[in-house]
Image 1 (cartoon, rainbow, N blue to C red):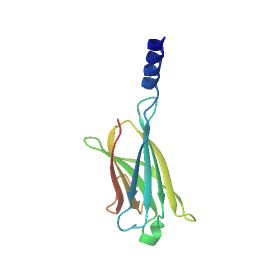
Image 2: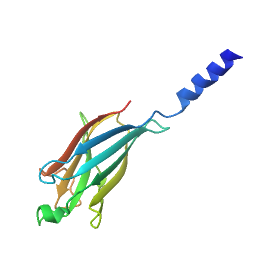
Image 3: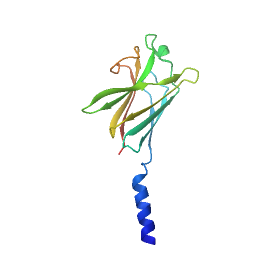
Length: 135
């Protein structure tokens, strides 16, 4: 009886996705005041689900009048940089959020200020970089 219970618990542990990894990161110049919280978890298909929430984020045009938005990028060594999307920015609350998925277990999250929301590569105005490793 005890062996069956232990076996059942072990099988359940193998089928339940792993707990999420959490990261707290401060933004860099020129958006000094931002505080980012990132959560990465592995879903049932083995992909990583990334959730980003940034507080105290200045509007892009306040940093530089030519800037329009914040873009989130996923950089994987040997695979280049891919745009995950644009932060969903709330100017009233000065917060931004984004959810994205990647198949890679190790990647770098980059948030940049962009003058063109359709940019295909990050600008030089990077406000956050964080290496993420999630097994």
